[in-house]
Image 1 (tube, rainbow, N blue to C red):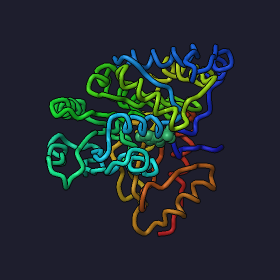
Image 2: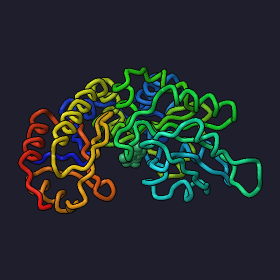
Image 3: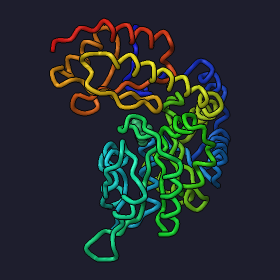
Image 4: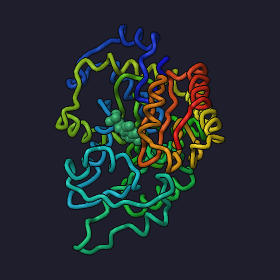
Length: 342
Ligand SMILES: Cc1ncc(COP(=O)(O)O)c(C=O)c1O
């Protein structure tokens, strides 16, 4: 058995998802007449209480388009030190938008209003003007950490007052909504733009959606074309997105339960130094100094369990659509039997 826990991006489309993809009505989305893409965009915008949306190939692209549209160099984006837009998008903030990045040291990817206020650039030519604030919920490198909606509200109120746009990297926002029992609209109201990913916990083969006002999305469409993200008969993959929004959101609770079971199983292991509190579908734990991280990953791979490192001595386990009770049991059994050299 192969149990792939490297990421929630490794899922295969289900049979039902494939069926809706095969029967999707398509057009040419660059010409604006693909009915399935239009339906996905309208559905996504409605869900988060916004006017419009734009279907894109990836979450990196939706984030980078949002940054480009909201800003005008010289300037800076403010985000947490663990943010995907800063760490894992190839330096796109500088490359695409010519901006500096100001990093906040939050708690597992979550900063406070006070930290943000202290970070705003004063009106002084020495400093790049603060032009955009970005929040990542759940935070991937923070181990699937959840933002407190009250803190988001405080930050959003401040940003509105300061005329600072607020972006949500919501690659895993449905994990947050399900875990905290919050309506998408309740979350959406606080943000000027929202990026959601269909190809992570929701199990689609490809696709992200950028959501915002009509004016914002009009400009975003221009930038998507320049970035090479205009897709033609994209209804085939948009159909998977519609299916996933209808069928794969509530079930994320199962992934969260599985992550809790895994973290419970790790608790009594003598080779584990610490485990981050599980808040959604990601488990990050730290191996004791005497354990070789590479050896650990290889030993697990030898028994068919695929995991990734997430920094020195840190291991990440991500549960998802293709991890069922059987795979969780198998993982726990292998963890229980694991023999490591100290
Ligand atoms: C929080 C977050 N944002 C954005 C992305 C980028 O998504 P993509 O891989 O579709 O570019 C990822 C990918 O893992 C992510 O975890």
